View (tube, rainbow, N blue to C red):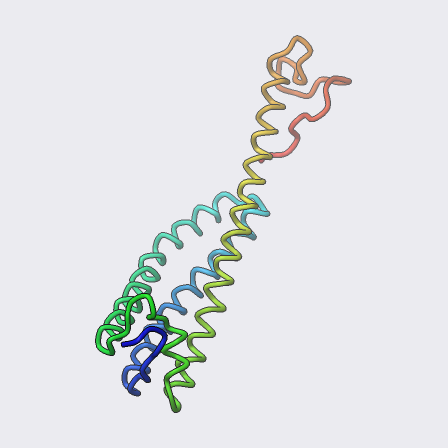
Length: 175
């Protein structure tokens, strides 16, 4: 097929692509909920819930990867079937060319998929920044602890209590 030209999908092809998109979007939506929870647990420094959330993520991630692979392989199959070069093959181009109710449903599914994947990437980015910030705080607190435990004018007395009138920055809360 010539570059840039796309064939219209048959209704059953549009429906099958839509079904695969919906499955992938649902899996990503589940991961997005976990990412939002992760953010909340990071802000609270709730290690138990962060651990449980990570377990949930590990449990649900394979389904998302499998759904993505199924959608991608069907997309390639459609390209091969219709003679669309891989460089020209895209869901948006196929969705625009799809007609009727199935075409409308495919375009709606694609919009939902795009919105969910964009939000998931945004949330994961925010969580990464927050995690790095939390690690920075832990590093600072560890540095304060080391300084307090080592110098001749340490911040802690022999029993681990705070010395009166000594250095600032003593750890008073758990990280």
